[in-house]
Length: 252
Ligand code: SF4
Ligand code: FES
Image (cartoon, rainbow, N blue to C red; front, side, top):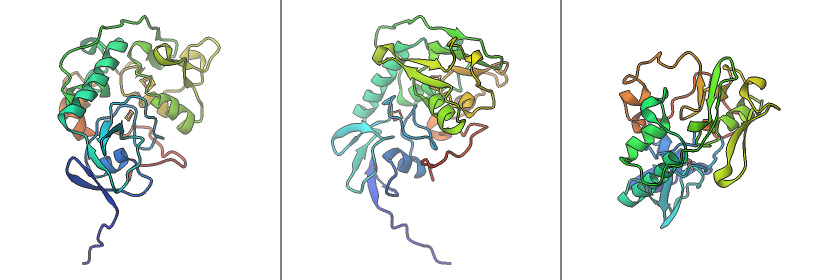
């Protein structure tokens, strides 16, 4: 039996040579090679977004987001170095300070990528003053709760609803610190949209902001996805209703 050589170009990531197909990002190629780079707003099968900055790496001396930077053969990328880890921890500490993330009281605990990435990156303490913003919990939908306190504005629900469900239920309004998730209804509440529990957008939230009702403790705390294995090992679990996007990058 003959083996075809993998003659794809490669870049160096923390000393490992990572093959890539032209057009792939550093993130795509790393994940395909089984190398985890922390991320929150990136999800295989979704168009890159580049908003959370958790995937920061240093490539040829410049900090950039691995989920949007194209892989090229001349790259020397650092990801798991002490100073890049410290940058990620600072980004995570800002995310935790900006919203109301109360892990011990959150029903997504153990299934939350923000919490799991913080564990992975070794974030142990808060650092910035907690903002404690006053945000709404939208319980208007019969099947789903939308808790704005936990939203990290990753726009995965926006992309899922627009690009996969073809509904555009969600959008982000405002800029900077005033940014917020809105829904497409005159009342501004989810119950007045055509959002459905069967939409992909109902199952992509990496935190506990979009939660199906009545399933909170179906899997007990301690036995959930990231309780059983670290996020670096579990990776991106496809949502149950995941469908292939049309004309978008899909991780090989
Ligand atoms: Fe991201 Fe969830 Fe907020 Fe949507 S509700 S933007 S999926 S954190
Ligand atoms: Fe790259 Fe969010 S995962 S910016």
